[in-house]
Image (cartoon, rainbow, N blue to C red; front, side):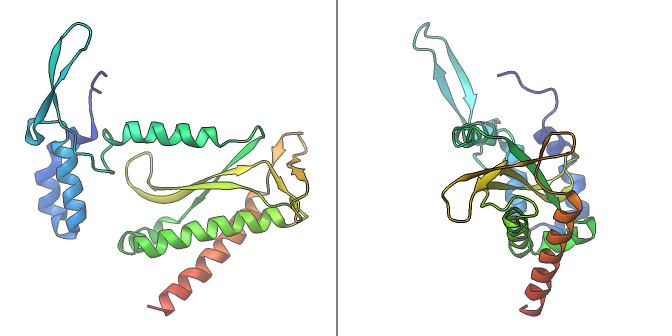
Length: 216
């Protein structure tokens, strides 16, 4: 596999000293471990091993990987395997892609309370989808969905949001039949109005966040 011209590890190595000098006091022990792991991944610092071709006998030295779950290089294969498994679970039906995002004002709170805030984010998103889909005004069915957390944006800045893959239809309340998804005025598959999704999600998230705050 060809090495990319610029990797995240290269950025980390170049800016590590400056970053730690300014922000090192804000990092947790786990975050420091991730930083070191990504920097050392597939370098002589982690040692290496010999790979040999069974056919021609050619040998080469390959540096060991860090195997940290946050490392972009180490997770490439794991990500591919995970995607393949999820694809095998897909039904022969249309699917919708729905994204729920937290406002940037909640970013610092999420960073300091990841388990609580991300948990609320997942539950609010799932409850919103299931509740709206069960409403006869929209679908009136039990849908299936897969929700995945992304804590970074495309610019690699903290940007917590979840992506939901939602079935374009669902089971009737008694589970006896399949109810097909509705279509928009342009006769395209349609799940629910964005404003409705936003309003319900916002209410559920804020209510849960307030309860979490009151409970300490």
